[in-house]
Image 1: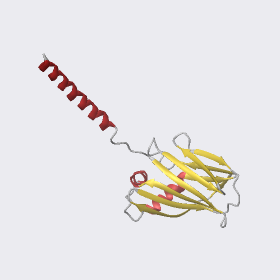
Image 2: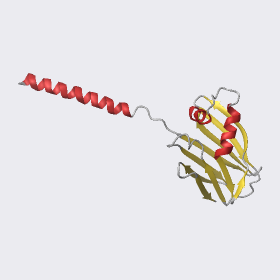
Image 3: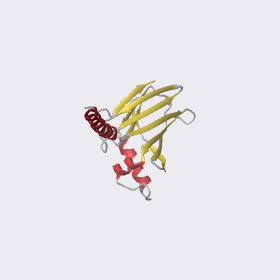
Image 4: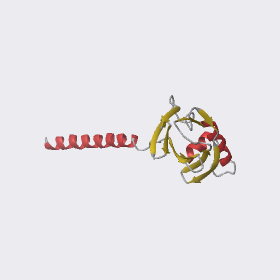
Length: 164
């Protein structure tokens, strides 16, 4: 009787262990899709400087080019210009791509817009990687004259606006 009870307990522990293993394995691989952009206002030059951080594989998949090829930076520039719009006080601003840098799993993209003397409202349309990855979230942090604002973008909410 005790032997039968021990055998049943051993089977129960074995089955519980296998179920626990599969539950834990389901959490092992979660790909997180996000980009982060820091916006700094440079008072002396009346410029908004943008620094965007993206996953190298994600941007590479979206623009369909290997990050180690010569044309990668040009394609990133074109992609950012087509997927990021800035409006200051209701007026559209032209963004100027100033460079990019691949650093392992991260691509840093730098761009700016000039002629910004004062900001009452800042509206951004950010569709970076949204068409390629349905769960993509883009975060934009804006620093303007001592004030900090954060905007979130995702499918269905591609445009956001903050006031200062």
